[in-house]
Amino acid sequence: MTKKIPAEIRKIQKEVKKYKQKRYQYSQAEEIPAIYIYTEGVNTEPIYFESLKKYAEDYLNIKIHKCSTDPLTVVEKAVDDFYASVKKNKEFIEKKTGGVFKQVWCVFDRDDFKTKFNNAIHKGLSYNYEIAFSNPCFELWFYLHKHYQSSVINRHNYEQDLENIFGVKYKKKENIIQLFINKLLEEYYPYKLQSLFDNAMNLEYNIKVCHHCSTDVINECYNCDPRTKVHYLVMLIMYKYLSDDKKNIIKNKYPEITSIIETLIT
Image 1 (tube, rainbow, N blue to C red):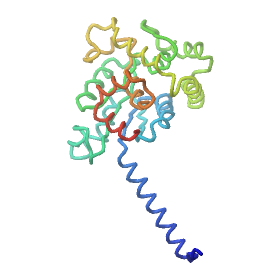
Image 2 (cartoon, rainbow, N blue to C red; image 1 turned 90 degrees about the vertical axis):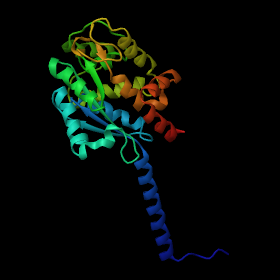
Image 3 (cartoon, helix red, strand yellow; image 1 turned 90 degrees about the horizontal axis):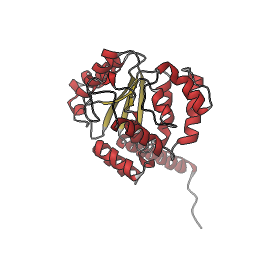
């Protein structure tokens, strides 16, 4: 006959088990690489990336910061947070902090910011940050879910275009944006993104508008319309759902973080 464990002992054992589980969860979280996303927009981009977090919660710790300003200030906010604040953060420039990979992404649009747009790109790259810009606007990224687009569209027309394409209202208001993104996720995420990434990469590889930049060098990118770099960030977040060819693209571009991700998801 099994001897009954006294209630006070069972209580202690339960507390010890909870403590061990908490420590394990904490240690696991500490080993997950962090992605810090700084956005120019206060509704569209933050809601979109917040909605994607659930797909990567076991291998990326995604933190989103809303800056609500122009492109250059977005980068400067990231600099203030990560460079100037911690002994000029030498470890971060090497993309290593305490053994856990950390990466900063600055997400902004061209809109009407010609000089600040180009300066933001150059400053961000000088601090080894990743730049996920959209030219002319983030709505181009949504548009590419359905159609390839290589000609210039007035950014003010994108909202109406998106309503016509997706059959759902599109306005830069929090509740409306959330409904639109819910529709987007329902239709495409996580397994139907191949054509989206193809459209974004084909657009990047077939630039004809801008004579100052290429897929590898960013110079006068204000002239490069339409164009987006958002696909690299989204591919990183959606890594475990990518096709093998897209995984190879993102591995070649971000080998250090993808090696950690693969360790976590295998």
